[in-house]
Image 1: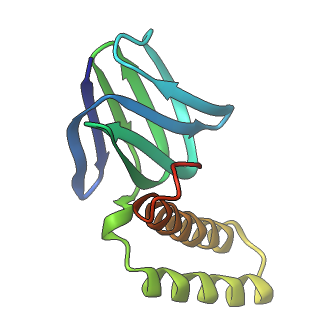
Image 2 (image 1 turned 30 degrees about the vertical axis):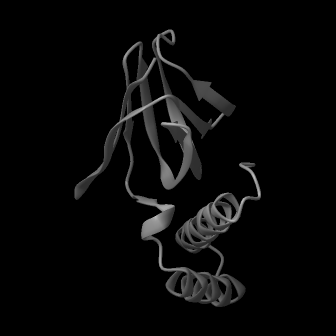
Image 3 (image 1 turned 45 degrees about the vertical axis):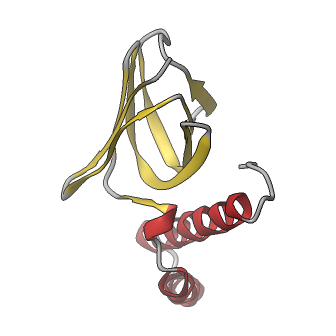
Length: 139
């Protein structure tokens, strides 16, 4: 049975689709959701979110936020999220390089967040490329 997955950022609805399974990383660890799951609410770490839809695996880079799980709907509220298929790999690599240079000069939460975001985006692209290349689906 399927359920609705909705990922919302301040500037757009990133995703609103019917899915069969969702896997995400909460701040306390990995979690997976199927339809009919017991309701819960948790904080998400900046990490990959994966979902299965009609037998296909998809990847979304989620930059933290909150996950509200209900028996027929999962809602993600996040500052930013991108489907792996939307990510410009070259741009993400340059963002990572800029963040690494900045981190070498200055220590701070803002620099760490920028680097973490770039790394999550690059991992999303790499996972999508692996899945499409027939390499299976491993987070």
